[in-house]
Length: 109
Length: 147
Image (cartoon, rainbow over all chains, first blue to last red; front, side):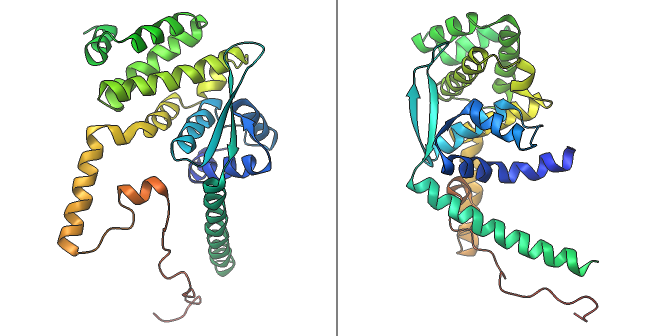
């Protein structure tokens, strides 16, 4: 994947991660693994962690520290009510954007 | 100035700082080297108050410890764009730096001059709420239509 997709992902990764957490709670590595699995291979694990810290600061997720067999406790993130509202808003914006871009695309053909 | 002396000067002899250093010393060597580099970068681009720097460093080492324990190669943690990784991380602590004050000042000045609160001022950017999409219901002009 090229530079363009990296740039576009910057604006949407937050929504993507919230959407992943809407399915079930997860910790950082699981989210990165899922993204890789879906073809988002250029996303650094650290970028996901930074984003998780941000959505925690903004109160979109609840965090539970779960003991891990090796190393420090894992932070497990789950979407809360505020996060769900934010995600709904994200999808509305997404629908608006894709709709308008499709029109532009069709008009330019 | 030696970077650790600079840090000690800003943060002071706090127990949080000592604990951070001990945690860093326990990391694998390549992790530690990269953390040092990211840490140095944050002094130039990140928050400026001791508390905010400490809070950033504690979050940062949480991430490094988790990734190291999970066996993530350091390359996969920072990715192809280490600066981008550092910037993304630092962005989380922007509100505590002096630039935040200037952002607020700029927004307030515009509000005062126009009597209108800019929608995408610092407050709106933080919550991401209530972003009105102007002209959302206007149709695009058709191709070739005179404007």
